[in-house]
Length: 290
Image 1: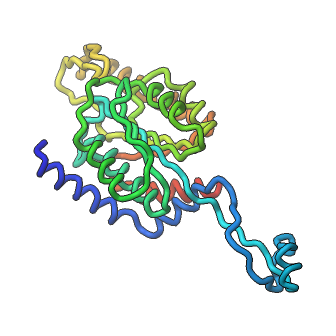
Image 2 (image 1 turned 120 degrees about the vertical axis):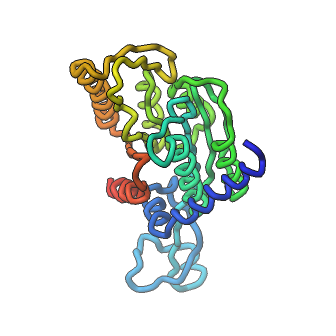
């Protein structure tokens, strides 16, 4: 990708993200993720109806008039966005590839952090850590995040979600907001996912394409696992073979859903063929009530 084209694409993603980040979405995000506690901000004169437990007795004694302490939420939070760059993310049967939705969504989440004065960092991964951008504030950092997701060419094709989660656990000890964006076509990440969900405020975002599990009726097809390279032969004219294939995919999804639910991990599914902002707002509303 030429530099001029890249800059144009970055600007387009940022413009769309800014447009999508409405006051409603910003408010729902802020209500869903709270700071680490309350901190003292100032004292003011007591007004009838104020909580008497907040009276500052030292100031009251000096001024010979009741004053109370005011506290505000220690808001500053850190967000980490983990984005799967494995080859399965390049699939797309509608207007957008899964990777394109992941890029746009990462920009939206970054602007939500910016609007709430939160830091945001990025981890790009396949079966290894491909790129790490430390958490920072500011528009320059968001530009860098969008640029990397759009232009970065991963060295590997397969996925290892545990590698990304374990890396996160090593780089931050303080509780953070974590968004894991993937299609979750991977194995053996259960333990790491549980560990991160206990330590951080984790949300798993599964990006799906409406046709990724459908096969056209064209006879014998050889399917190659986009990440492992394994070859599978299926007769698409054979009803039993097709039913077995669909059942396998359904069971994989059911297993994933059960794991997420049993471990009380926040989950959002985004379909590449549908607008997702309403789903994102709804997700934050539900999260706020928990």
